[in-house]
Image 1: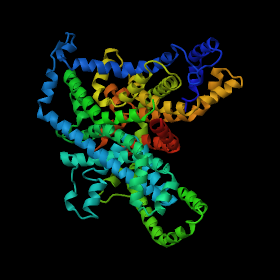
Image 2 (image 1 turned 120 degrees about the horizontal axis):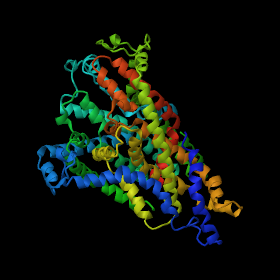
Image 3 (image 1 turned 180 degrees about the vertical axis):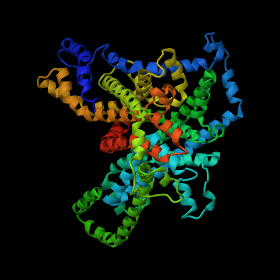
Length: 328
Length: 305
């Protein structure tokens, strides 16, 4: 709320000279598209954004990259210069089957979660277009509640829901549903059910975003086209598959890309669930594994670089596509 | 519903097919009505499932421990107490964390929105060498997982003595939020036609005044949307806070809640839920108020370009 009024005062002084300059220089505006043309102006405007990104992201990234080719242990923390070890950190990591297990689990977790989120999200968005106003608003409010809750608060309540002794989930499964085996069942001890719980939580949190973006896109599908297809005898599924789907594809691509990015880097959910008493070594995904390496800067740097490469591999396709479709 | 109105109005204008088209419609109606009703019921069930954890959090917060530790869960806290909230609020650590969160979020918001706004102006109103490279950088930087970088960010901040400081956390937050904010605001600036400003200049305003009188007010929704986005990101962020704020005295609210969970998990879920409710409810209320604007902004910024 404090943000909007600020820019006028603070943004005005730096702009004045830039803007005033070209006006006398070119009294007749020869190019309509470049009204504020000046040599240094745009660069000056980029500096404030570039500085924090360079300091907060660029420098740590470069440093981590360099460090991943060095030996940085205890001696170096006390001031000895780091030794170059070439690719040794990488070969150490990548020759370890455990690391491959983590990578495989992360990719599988990411794809399953992103896929489920998109499938449920698109289904609910279509459902929203088919129901009456009251049902739609109820659904919207339910989803917004889940979406708006801070991550840590939701993780806290999910731990309580899945609590082995007094959790509602165990009560529901054992009492009304009669599966006695779930009385006192601990959900996070076994890696498989740990990931099941994590998936439930991640999908529950991510679906609302997909529903609302998809629903907004579906509303943009021209009603005349739908009507025309209906008159031509297209079934509901055909109308969706051949009319709506191609029209909302760009939005689905972006939503899907974001899901893949978010689910690959999933950290908070896994970390918090691990803290709730899960065996950490068997449940690490990329993010928590890098975190667990934090005492060995070089290895952590190498692992983080590997993680970065995986992310770019999974998303590079999307980025290229976006760049192609986007008129820069 | 509203989407269904225009087509029916449009049909009669297509003179001859209007009549034959009407008949099958009438016959389908009862079936569609039943289907609609069923789908509506399904939507309500899904809504209840989705909202249940939130309800459960608030409901449990009002129950004393003895009522929570029963084989049969209590679904409606009719005889609830405020004792859990009182216990959370008498502990000074909540207020300390609230102050830290407020400071970090406030600073992040101001700097991120201001810097992003200026950068968005540059890339959408100027054509200059390196512009495309900058835009591609903005896009690619968003793909960098913070989780692949936090150890290094910690090391850098540590070198500068910025670990456990509001300033240090603000720097990494601003860096994390800026790329998306720039992208979003760029969409909004692109959406305001330059001709509007030029028209105002023809009418005798200076460039600067034309910008602030004409364009800037039109950008206000974009600034609000990006501000809301930044606020929610910074206020709820956990990972970087966990890495940077290692001192219990410098915890942000999410870290404080995690501390509360770890201290009370096995013993007192009521207090934990009171803490979660306390930090969640204001954010949810704010989110419900602004979400329409923000998602419009997300779509305008990220999709339409």
